[in-house]
Length: 593
Image (cartoon, rainbow, N blue to C red; front, top):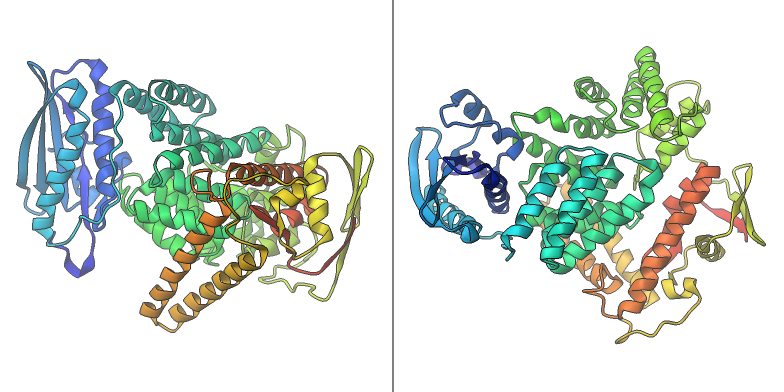
């Protein structure tokens, strides 16, 4: 298709056939096809059908399945053994007339098979550019130099990850670690380990939540250190920073991942999910629709995210329609709670109660160690586990389930004039915590001391080394001070408002200018406050202090959540961590510390 009306050209890479090749070669060939899909998906102007929709098509004669793909071009190929290796045949077929636009052969040894991916990619892109008269060369693809043995371990690990079980995650991790023993600089292996922890974390293994989140975060950082354009690790980091409450850094990383690869269906759906938490619902919907279009044979795989998007957009009928189509309603522990909330907004209380009961059953099994849960416990957990930056349509439903609102309401009126009071008192080996008429005791830990210092100085920016109570020696000098940091954040907030205003008035060119300035500023702030040791200018000691303070504060909040969920939710929403930490409550609070 010749790029009509700025529509992206869609291609589908069908599985390369194996002609007379021994079974031991199959993982490499399967990985060869998947790598081509990844390579092509990184080009601007190309949409690439997900491998989940193409992997079941074994022959070009399967016209029914191919037609459902909706692709403008097909790439097919085969492996055939020759005297000194393998002959890789490849064809580019235009679907509107089934014309072979390009055909070629590549003779490769086992050791050079991976190099053929680059050659085929370049050939196909060159031919496509002539076909569609469009520049496809602005892309982020960067081929890693890696040995075949390490690569094969990576392929086997990825295969296990796709099974989606805790057991397969552990097996996958072993394969990735084996790859790193062969090649310690293999960035994709670190990404694989990160994804294995990410799967555990996303599946909400509550007893391993902190371990899995930290594993996903740390190994993604290691991958980025080796390859700063690793779009999967960028997206994983974007989500972990989202849960850490660093919304600006999260958004920056997610958008960078999207720029690095705008056409990987699974990555698009991950970013779409995060955009819901950040409040960008229109953008989340666009990414969701694009992901479904790139996986046309299995669009139901992304229905849960669609349900979430339309729920938060207030389109409750559409949300319930999508939710009812989801085969595995235990895909998230609180998926059925979202459905219950959607039916609440529709005043369909019988369905609401049905799905709320299902949620309580899942909560009992997955989170509450087999114990029956009260509505309050189930609601408070949901408040903690969903990292909303903005108000959620869940809130009126939560009030209803807690008995604070006897009738359905579509909005709640905040009690802005009230000043909440609390106590955060250290007494020997225990802390006495009081908030919202509930007092609890909790064992001493370092994170509680950090929180106490922040509560003493609301709205103040405290350096991570100040919270640790030490002065660290660093290499170089400080890049940014407290006042400069405040000015950066104020400018970022101002730019976000400018972008919103310009888009509402239809001034899209102006909005794009504001977006460029916003992204440049966020990227600069990310560098000076630190993403990893690689880019930090003030030395590794500060980075270690930042990481230590961040994790011990979050661990302390997690401990508080077990005995006082409301206080934990408030602290999680109000405390910002990083090189500079602060306590910034949405409404006035007075603390005795």
